[in-house]
Image (cartoon, rainbow, N blue to C red; front, side):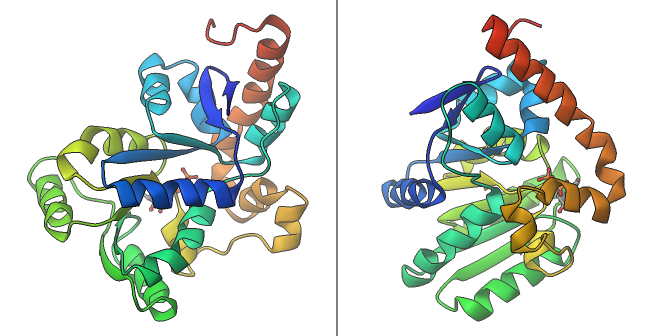
Length: 246
Ligand code: UDP
């Protein structure tokens, strides 16, 4: 089942269901894209048709962010829970370990993705890891990155270049790369490497992770000004049922 949030079709499923779906995608082996959609991304997409179509053409779009969970419920089709990039990533690791998946981390500052993978490999030695940082230049350098991924032939490509760049990047390259599943995971490598701490579980249970992130990284306030605008658009959608028109 799907719920239309500002013209984007969000999957109504739990984390466990999303993980099973992705495991199935990996087993099938045809290139698939997963978007973890947060309110900032959807607010942007409601003013950028190309971005919206790119997201809607993904194989799975999950509700990343309390704002999306609230919006889905408010619009009458509740989603069971948040399904974020890092939650998906961490939940896929046990299976990846068991089946000896090849996993490629692309993104974050030099050294961070490699450090994140080293942490992961310590806990899940069955995984075959490779990584590249996310500050490559278009042209020759990007070609080398693409060639590296192609040669490695990952089962799973996690792309943490920040939204919406990672979604555009995956869209542009997933076919030629032939990777079964590519997922945009934002700042997950910063968290997995231990450079950025996630809010404690009790804060997440109170649905206040966004506030904790804002307090820790005040530079994010500018992005978060999209949140009230997102909420206003949701009200507009609820009461006019016409969110695609501006
Ligand atoms: N990043 C990158 N290349 C760039 C710009 C950013 O790899 O050219 C990385 C950045 O280091 C960080 C991630 O992209 O690890 C974006 O993190 P953020 O927390 O902003 O992600 P989001 O909130 O969009 O999920």
